[in-house]
Image (cartoon, rainbow, N blue to C red):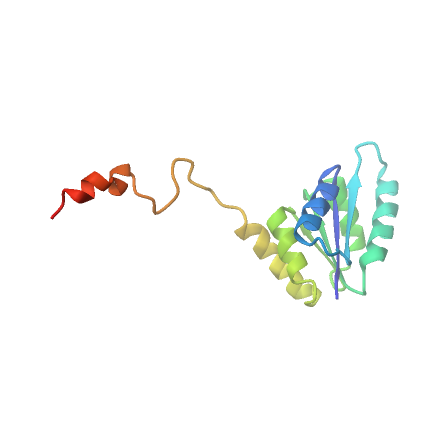
Length: 149
């Protein structure tokens, strides 16, 4: 079963871990989170990331990072081999939940599911009224219905 490691700018990784614990209160074996403080040198981030990855890798793992090109992602790229350890960037809650839901699948499938969860979880929502709701409250007016014959 692949492990899951979230590496992100502090405090995002631990916040996502907390959200995961909210949905999976019985335990999160196979999940680790690494917050990257702004004052850590890259070498320190890499050492901490290697340790965190070792704690979840069995032998496969998926690493989720927040921003492509930033320190968490750059460090994760050094750890991902493209085979046993894969990397997806742009982590969000739907992506993480989808990955956690399918942790028993091989890492290739897990990558596909994580990306789908992340992209399908992003949508524009109407701000004015819910879809498929009538515009007029008169439709629920009993007097209006009473006068129809």
